[in-house]
Length: 261
Image (cartoon, rainbow, N blue to C red; front, side, top):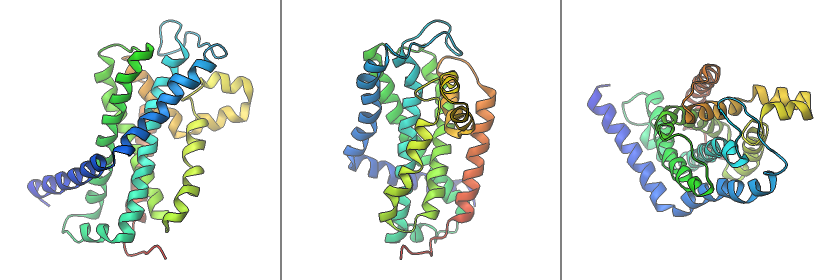
């Protein structure tokens, strides 16, 4: 495998994913509508009940909208990662992945290209959301838009690898919705995306521990700290470790010869 062949392969997969994304405009809108509903509608109701004290990485009292913005960024990445697993199920059934894997390039590299392509496209939606969030006074430091980029990319790779792993377990498109209900909603709601962990601990000790071991919690905290010019090393190592774990499971478990029947 030489550099030119590797780059040509990655560029081809990236363009294919980008064209699919452009042709599905509703996908872009739906990815923004979900977090905007939380940011504009739900946050207005929760604001009075959920005042946020001074906690890391913030240096002053913050509004509820400011607190949940990093979690909503990760929500976009989560849904896109799961959307990629749906496309993999479809591709496997229709045979396009079989054609792709006929190339002489190693299978792990091809699947890595798929994950990176999904992650890069997800980043465009996250930054679009952050720009819209300025309208409701969610204003992180200007440099934070740059420092959060590596964190967003790592989280996007984590959720893309998780989605790719799930695609190896989903044999039929009809089963996709049910599986997603057992993945997306528990990961999102049992995390620090909407509430600080200390509030969860006040409500229930066992819920707190579930949130604490949820990889999505650490992904959210990594993005939250990076957006405010800080590094959460524990969250970074846990997110990176989970990314590697799911990527290995996805690569070893992927078998394009398995049909959806």
